[in-house]
Length: 160
Length: 204
Figure 1 (cartoon, each protein chain N blue to C red):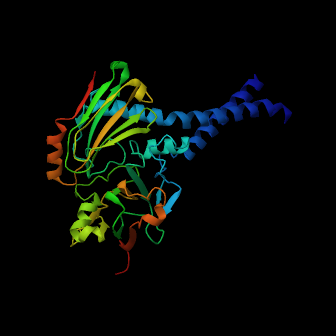
Figure 2 (cartoon, one colour):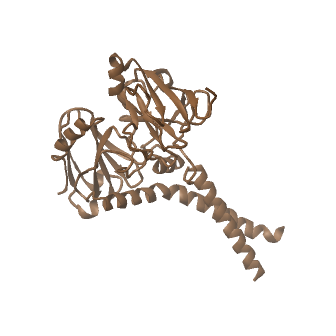
Figure 3 (cartoon, rainbow over the protein chains, first blue to last red):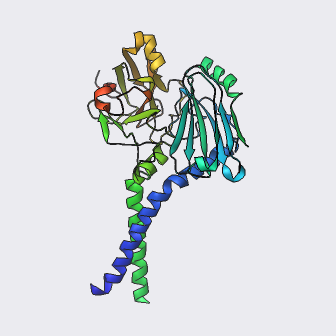
C-alpha cells in the first residue's frame, strides 16, 4: 500500500486539477465557440445582423425565444483600439441592448423604452477584449417582426 | 518500468475522475439537462445568478451549456420545469393543460424545448405561449390556459406544439420583473400549473 501512496497522490492532484480546469474554462470555451459560430452565420465584428425569426430551422444558440427578434454584433477591442459605438434604434415594444463578455457574463444592459439608445464602449468598460452584443425586441407576430426589420436598419455597431 | 506504468495508470484514472465529476456537476454531459437552480415555485426551478458575475463556476458552466446569452436578473428571470403537476416527466406522448394568471412582469412567455435545449423540429408555428396571447383570452391575462400537445387541438387559441420534442421541458421567462420579485419570488410569482390530461395508450 505504501508503494501506491505516490501514484494515489498523483491521481488525486490530477483529478482536482482536471475538475477545476474544466469548470473554470468551460464557459469561455463555449462562448468562444458561439462567437465563432455566429460569425460563420454572418454576424460581423462591429456590425449588427438581425437574425431570422427564431424557428426550429433557424435557431443557432440554445433556448432562443420564438417571441423575440435578436440582432447580434461581435466586438473585439483588438480591432477597435478607440472603442466601439453602439446604437439601438427606437422600437415600439420591449427592447434591450445587452453586452456579454468572454466568460458569458451579461455585464451591461440598457432598456429601450421606445427611445433610441446609444453608448460608447471602450476596452476598460468591458471585462474582456471580445464578446457579443445582443438586441432583443419583442416580436411575437410576423407583423411585429416586419416592424423589427424596419427598426434594425438603423442599429449601429462600429469601431471608432 | 512497472513503477512508471503504475503512475501512468493512476494519472489516467485521476484525469478521468476529474473530468467526469466536472462534466457531471457542471451539467456538461450530453444527456444532462436544464438549468436547475435553488428557487423552486410549483415545480419551476430558477437561479437569479444567471448571467451574473455572482454565479458560481458550476452554475456559470451550466448556463453556458444550457442558456447561453441569458440576461441578468434585473432585466429577465428564467424558470424551467421538467415535470407535470403529478411529478411525471413531460413527454410528447401526453397532452397537458398549462394554466395560470397574471404574472409580475412587463412581459412573460412559456416556451417548449427538447432535450438538446432547442426548439423542437416541427413546423406547427406554435412554440410558445406569451402575455400577448393571454391578454386575448382575458383582460390583462388574469386567467389563461393553453394546451400542450403534439397535434393541434380543436380550440387553438392557446396551443404549444410538442410534436417531435420527445422528452421536453418548459421555460418561463419574466421580462422586466416587478419590484419585489427578486426579493420574494415565491410570494410574488404565481407560477403556471401543468396538468396532464391524457397520454397515448390511456384507456378511453
